[in-house]
Length: 214
Image (cartoon, rainbow, N blue to C red; front, top):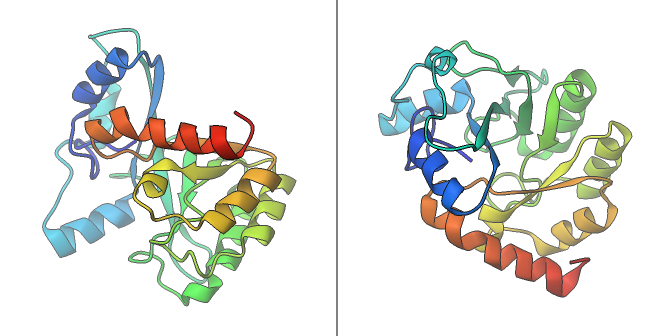
């Protein structure tokens, strides 16, 4: 999930922590966007992060026992397989690898190749591969079979992005292939509002119960 402190969520980290405790959650990951996305937000929308990332060194959960992990959603940048690692010059230990159409500065049909090259280069750092079945970012260009094959080889999970699923922004055929063939899948929120956090789980849990193993 993202926060308003460092990214494009509507709520702060403190607000998120208070609310997830009400939902009986015990651990969450704040995965704010990379600096490449924040720079894009600033240029196009005049949006900027409300806090300095290094301030996390002083942040503590004073409300409850929710364990909060801070990662970052990396971005593929170009044909050289370059990736934006950081937020405000701070790079966390683990990352989510993603491609966004506003950030990836190359031919969109090369996004599968770029993702695979990034996996080969950074696989020890990558926690999972973000939204490979999304209608929003390069979905028509992702070779899901090749991506699943390489992710399995490097023991990297792929994401079932539930925000896109509940907003009807998921290629269900590719999602079906991913769920049936990936060795590991993260059923991940990518939530941007507290209402999403409360409501979206019901939809994707029901989908899995009806169609797969639950």
